[in-house]
Amino acid sequence: MLPPSPTHGARLTIDLEALVANWRALSQHAVGATAAVVKADAYGCGIEHVVPALVRAGCDTFFVAHLSEGIRARAVAPAATIYVLNGLPPNSASTYARERLRPVLGSPIEIVEWRDAFPGLDAPAALHIDTGMNRLGLRPEDLGDLPAVFRPALLMTHFVASEIPTDAANDRQLTLFAQVRTTLPGAPTSISNSSGLFLDQVRNFGEALARPGYALYGGNPTPGRTNPMRDVVRLEAGIVQVREVPAGESVGYNSTWIAPTERRIATISLGYADGYLRTGSASNNRPGGRAYVNGALCPIVGRVSMDLITLDITAVPHVERGDVAVILGDGLTVDTVAEDLGTNGYEVLTGLGHRYERRYIGG
Ligand SMILES: *Cc1c(COP(=O)(O)O)cnc(C)c1O
Image (tube, rainbow, N blue to C red; front, side, top):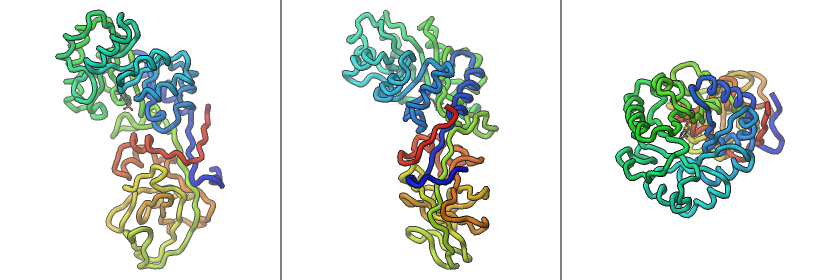
């Protein structure tokens, strides 16, 4: 383990080799081709590092949420196909054309604007069909209004609950999507996110292009079962101080935790400003987050503050200022940390802060 950085409170290590191994494993599992979803700065892992690593591994199609993210991806992947999920904002068609990006069109007005910009509708774009999310996408009953010449480069839909294989929404959505497919024959299809890739029904459907995000970055696409993916992110914070707290004294803001007996407390250089949610705070009645110190799992005590967190290290011998606490890694995965924080691993990853020392390995 490296010593903490003298200039930064915490260090985020991103393992590009594990990321590439995850993409390869997912592409081997998929029935068709496999893209990579790199929205939200590649789930916090850094678009400028993640995209080139995946291009070198053979990934040629990427999805982002915003046009600005598409422009960043284009800068590091000149030859890739890049789709922008959030659609076509007003007056943006010329930017799409300049950057050779493809919008995911999902409403009649977007299709009209795309046709006004490219009257032959010959500029490639995806068409998003809403099969139950009620968020983005064309409803199947609106398909009749499509311009006859429109041939989507990709016909896609998005699952509501693919991480729960028994959820009835999965079959309902697939049935609707299969009906839509018959009205646009020949359009390549794209259905799965990370969890969708593991649904038997999707494998039987035979989509052309899978769109995993979360699993690439180490998230478990099969909750409740063993995670088939490798960890990609590791987060370590330096211990700033170690102190003895007498029984009956409180630790942190608003005294939510009171030492039941004399305790040894380590204060680490990480807080909610770094994306470690305040919901990881602990009171005497309610446990919060955890971190490894010298190989032992230690509980957070008291409130998570902006720049600092306090850990109870009473059970761990020989802890000193300058040692390192492991927040993510060694078995504390994005999924287990998410559980500690009362959220999902997506929020843990995309919330990763911007003031860490960032280290990329395995590139
Ligand atoms: C985010 C997103 C994905 C990727 O989902 P994961 O669960 O992260 O794999 C795929 N498709 C759409 C439309 C998305 O918004």
